[in-house]
Image 1 (cartoon, rainbow, N blue to C red):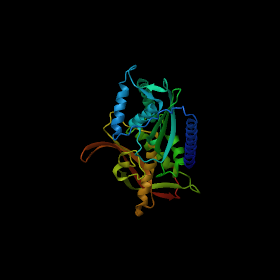
Image 2: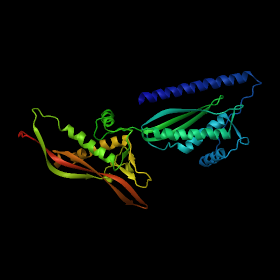
Image 3: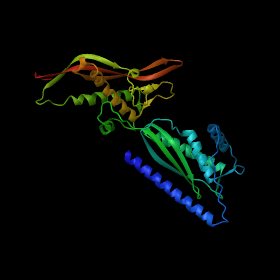
Image 4: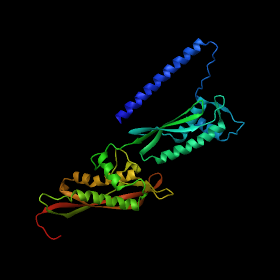
Length: 341
C-alpha cells in the first residue's frame, strides 16, 4: 500500500509539473502574440447551497429540448458532469484504509468547442448507469466513491475517473494474517454462490467452523494417543455484546451477524462477510476462555449457529435479523488407554 501511495504522489507531482509548464508556455505565446484573444475560462459557480444548485441543474439537463437547449463549453460541461455525479454517488465522509483508481470512457458530440445540454444529459444517463453497475461489481468492504472526475477533450472523448475508498482488515480475531484468512476462505466460500443469512449461509458457516477448528486438534500425538473431551459448559454469544472496534458491516459494528429486517428481499451474506464471520466466530470462544482463568484448560468442542428476528425499541421500533453463536466447551484429556474406537 505504501508503494502505491508513493507512486500516486509521484504521478500527481508529474501532472502538476506538466500543467505548470504548459501554462507558462501558453502565457508566453499569448504575450508574444498581441492579437491573440485568450479563451474565457470557466469559473465554477460560487453558490452557498451547492446541493440546490446541482439538483436544479440536473433537472434542467433532464428537461432540455434538442434544438432549443443551451450550449456549454467543454470545461463547463465537464465540471457539471463531475459535480452531478458526485452529488448522486460520492460519500467522502467515511473511514477507509485503502483506495483504488478506475476509469470509464465515453464520447460526446462537440461543435465549435461546445456540447449541448441534451447530449450532456444522454451522456450522464450512461455514466450514472455504469457507475452504479461498477459499484455493485466491487467485492470490497466499506466501499464508497471519494471523488468522480470528468474530462472532455476537443474531439469529444470523455474520461470519467473514479476514486473509490474501502476498508481492508487490519485485525484478525482468529487467523494469523490476511494471507492465511484468504487461503482458507477462498477454499470455503465463493463469490458465485448466494449465501442466505438463515439458510445455506448459516449451514455453510457452521460446517466451516467445526471442520476447521476440529482438524487442528485431530493431529496425532507423538506417540499417537487417544484424546477425548469432558463437557464443561455451553456459552452463547450475542450480537450486542461483542463489538468490533475496527468496524464491521453489521449493526452497531457487531462481530456477529445483525442486519435490518425491513428489507423487501431476503438478506444474503457476501463471500467477504462469510470470511469475516468465520474469523470472528472462531475467535469468540478462545477470547472467552482467555478472560476466565478457571477455564484455562478448556477448548471449543462444537459450534452451533441459530438465528432469530428481534425487536429493538428506542425512540423508534427496529427489527433485526441476527445470528446466535453457541459454543460447547470441554476439557481436553489425553489418555494412554486405547480401545477399538
